[in-house]
Image (cartoon, rainbow, N blue to C red; front, top):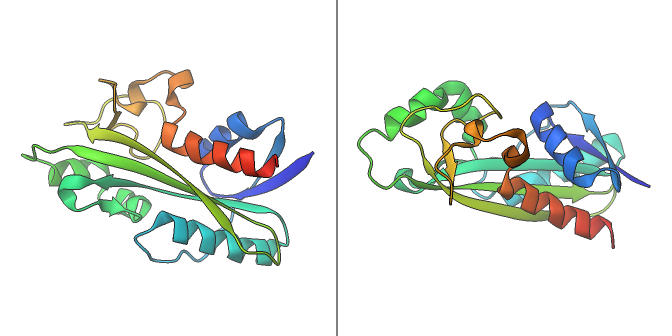
Length: 182
Protein backbone atom coordinates (compact mmCIF):
# COMPACT_ATOMS: atom_id res chain seq x y z
CA UNK A 1 0.00 0.00 0.00
CA UNK A 2 1.33 3.41 -0.99
CA UNK A 3 1.92 6.10 1.64
CA UNK A 4 2.19 9.84 1.12
CA UNK A 5 3.17 12.59 3.51
CA UNK A 6 0.94 15.65 3.40
CA UNK A 7 2.82 18.78 4.52
CA UNK A 8 0.31 21.14 6.11
CA UNK A 9 -0.65 22.78 9.39
CA UNK A 10 -4.35 22.44 8.59
CA UNK A 11 -6.06 19.41 10.17
CA UNK A 12 -9.22 20.17 8.15
CA UNK A 13 -7.32 19.62 4.92
CA UNK A 14 -5.79 16.40 6.26
CA UNK A 15 -9.28 15.10 7.07
CA UNK A 16 -10.46 15.91 3.53
CA UNK A 17 -7.47 14.17 1.93
CA UNK A 18 -7.94 11.07 4.09
CA UNK A 19 -11.64 10.88 3.17
CA UNK A 20 -10.72 10.73 -0.51
CA UNK A 21 -7.45 8.75 -0.53
CA UNK A 22 -7.72 6.20 2.26
CA UNK A 23 -7.67 3.21 2.36
CA UNK A 24 -6.03 3.07 -1.10
CA UNK A 25 -3.34 5.62 -0.19
CA UNK A 26 -2.26 6.16 3.43
CA UNK A 27 -1.96 9.84 4.36
CA UNK A 28 0.34 11.02 7.15
CA UNK A 29 0.69 14.66 8.11
CA UNK A 30 3.97 16.52 8.43
CA UNK A 31 3.47 19.80 10.25
CA UNK A 32 6.20 21.95 8.74
CA UNK A 33 6.60 25.54 7.51
CA UNK A 34 8.27 25.33 4.11
CA UNK A 35 9.33 28.45 2.24
CA UNK A 36 6.44 29.42 -0.01
CA UNK A 37 7.06 30.84 -3.46
CA UNK A 38 5.29 34.17 -4.12
CA UNK A 39 3.43 33.69 -7.38
CA UNK A 40 -0.01 34.23 -8.89
CA UNK A 41 -0.36 30.60 -9.97
CA UNK A 42 -1.15 28.09 -7.19
CA UNK A 43 0.22 25.26 -9.38
CA UNK A 44 3.71 26.79 -9.36
CA UNK A 45 3.54 27.43 -5.61
CA UNK A 46 2.45 23.85 -4.85
CA UNK A 47 5.09 22.28 -7.12
CA UNK A 48 7.86 24.38 -5.59
CA UNK A 49 6.76 23.43 -2.05
CA UNK A 50 6.45 19.73 -2.88
CA UNK A 51 9.93 19.63 -4.43
CA UNK A 52 11.46 21.40 -1.41
CA UNK A 53 9.77 19.05 1.07
CA UNK A 54 10.51 15.85 -0.89
CA UNK A 55 14.21 16.71 -0.84
CA UNK A 56 14.19 17.78 2.81
CA UNK A 57 12.29 14.76 4.18
CA UNK A 58 13.29 12.17 1.54
CA UNK A 59 9.68 11.02 1.36
CA UNK A 60 6.82 11.03 -1.14
CA UNK A 61 5.33 14.44 -0.43
CA UNK A 62 2.05 16.16 -1.18
CA UNK A 63 1.36 19.85 -0.64
CA UNK A 64 -1.76 21.82 -1.44
CA UNK A 65 -2.05 25.50 -2.22
CA UNK A 66 -5.51 26.96 -2.50
CA UNK A 67 -6.95 30.39 -2.78
CA UNK A 68 -10.08 32.42 -3.18
CA UNK A 69 -10.05 34.48 -6.38
CA UNK A 70 -12.66 37.27 -6.34
CA UNK A 71 -13.41 38.69 -9.80
CA UNK A 72 -14.36 42.22 -8.69
CA UNK A 73 -11.10 42.48 -6.72
CA UNK A 74 -8.98 41.43 -9.73
CA UNK A 75 -8.60 37.91 -8.28
CA UNK A 76 -7.55 39.14 -4.83
CA UNK A 77 -6.78 37.55 -2.40
CA UNK A 78 -5.84 34.67 -4.74
CA UNK A 79 -2.66 32.89 -3.70
CA UNK A 80 -2.36 35.25 -0.72
CA UNK A 81 -5.62 33.98 0.80
CA UNK A 82 -4.12 32.54 3.99
CA UNK A 83 -2.06 35.68 4.62
CA UNK A 84 -5.05 37.91 3.90
CA UNK A 85 -7.23 35.80 6.17
CA UNK A 86 -4.73 36.25 9.02
CA UNK A 87 -4.35 40.01 8.41
CA UNK A 88 -7.85 41.30 7.66
CA UNK A 89 -9.99 38.20 8.11
CA UNK A 90 -13.39 37.58 6.64
CA UNK A 91 -14.67 40.92 7.94
CA UNK A 92 -11.95 42.70 5.97
CA UNK A 93 -12.82 40.88 2.76
CA UNK A 94 -16.51 41.65 3.28
CA UNK A 95 -15.59 45.31 3.87
CA UNK A 96 -13.76 45.35 0.52
CA UNK A 97 -16.89 43.89 -1.10
CA UNK A 98 -19.32 46.49 0.33
CA UNK A 99 -21.46 47.88 -2.49
CA UNK A 100 -19.96 45.50 -5.06
CA UNK A 101 -22.59 43.99 -7.35
CA UNK A 102 -20.43 41.33 -9.07
CA UNK A 103 -19.74 38.93 -6.21
CA UNK A 104 -18.48 36.08 -8.42
CA UNK A 105 -15.40 34.20 -7.34
CA UNK A 106 -13.50 30.94 -7.73
CA UNK A 107 -11.83 28.68 -5.28
CA UNK A 108 -8.73 27.06 -6.75
CA UNK A 109 -6.78 24.18 -5.29
CA UNK A 110 -3.44 22.95 -6.61
CA UNK A 111 -2.27 19.62 -5.22
CA UNK A 112 1.35 18.78 -5.97
CA UNK A 113 3.11 15.45 -5.54
CA UNK A 114 6.86 14.88 -5.55
CA UNK A 115 9.15 11.94 -4.87
CA UNK A 116 12.73 12.58 -3.75
CA UNK A 117 15.04 13.19 -6.71
CA UNK A 118 12.15 13.65 -9.16
CA UNK A 119 10.24 16.59 -10.59
CA UNK A 120 6.91 17.50 -9.01
CA UNK A 121 3.56 17.21 -10.75
CA UNK A 122 0.45 19.18 -9.87
CA UNK A 123 -3.30 18.83 -10.31
CA UNK A 124 -5.78 21.71 -10.32
CA UNK A 125 -9.34 21.81 -9.09
CA UNK A 126 -11.61 24.83 -9.39
CA UNK A 127 -15.06 25.73 -8.17
CA UNK A 128 -17.19 28.75 -9.01
CA UNK A 129 -19.25 30.58 -6.46
CA UNK A 130 -20.19 33.93 -5.00
CA UNK A 131 -19.21 35.92 -1.93
CA UNK A 132 -21.92 36.14 0.73
CA UNK A 133 -22.85 39.55 2.15
CA UNK A 134 -22.09 38.39 5.70
CA UNK A 135 -20.44 35.47 7.48
CA UNK A 136 -22.79 32.50 7.76
CA UNK A 137 -22.41 29.08 9.35
CA UNK A 138 -20.07 27.31 11.77
CA UNK A 139 -18.72 24.35 9.78
CA UNK A 140 -15.44 24.18 7.91
CA UNK A 141 -12.54 26.63 8.07
CA UNK A 142 -10.91 29.53 6.24
CA UNK A 143 -13.23 31.32 3.84
CA UNK A 144 -16.04 28.78 4.19
CA UNK A 145 -18.40 31.23 6.01
CA UNK A 146 -18.40 33.64 3.02
CA UNK A 147 -18.14 31.27 0.00
CA UNK A 148 -21.42 30.19 -1.58
CA UNK A 149 -20.75 27.39 -4.10
CA UNK A 150 -22.51 27.63 -7.47
CA UNK A 151 -25.92 25.99 -7.33
CA UNK A 152 -26.34 26.56 -3.58
CA UNK A 153 -27.83 29.30 -1.46
CA UNK A 154 -25.76 28.36 1.60
CA UNK A 155 -22.10 28.97 2.38
CA UNK A 156 -19.76 26.04 2.82
CA UNK A 157 -19.86 26.76 6.56
CA UNK A 158 -23.66 26.23 6.54
CA UNK A 159 -23.55 22.89 4.74
CA UNK A 160 -23.53 19.64 6.69
CA UNK A 161 -20.41 17.47 6.89
CA UNK A 162 -21.20 15.32 3.85
CA UNK A 163 -21.55 18.41 1.66
CA UNK A 164 -18.67 20.25 3.30
CA UNK A 165 -16.04 18.39 1.27
CA UNK A 166 -15.04 21.03 -1.22
CA UNK A 167 -15.48 20.29 -4.92
CA UNK A 168 -12.39 22.32 -5.87
CA UNK A 169 -10.10 20.40 -3.52
CA UNK A 170 -11.82 17.05 -4.08
CA UNK A 171 -11.32 17.43 -7.86
CA UNK A 172 -7.58 18.02 -7.45
CA UNK A 173 -7.16 15.19 -4.91
CA UNK A 174 -9.07 12.74 -7.13
CA UNK A 175 -6.69 13.61 -9.98
CA UNK A 176 -3.81 12.82 -7.61
CA UNK A 177 -5.45 9.51 -6.65
CA UNK A 178 -5.81 8.56 -10.31
CA UNK A 179 -2.13 9.37 -10.91
CA UNK A 180 -0.95 7.39 -7.86
CA UNK A 181 -3.12 4.41 -8.83
CA UNK A 182 -1.46 4.00 -12.25
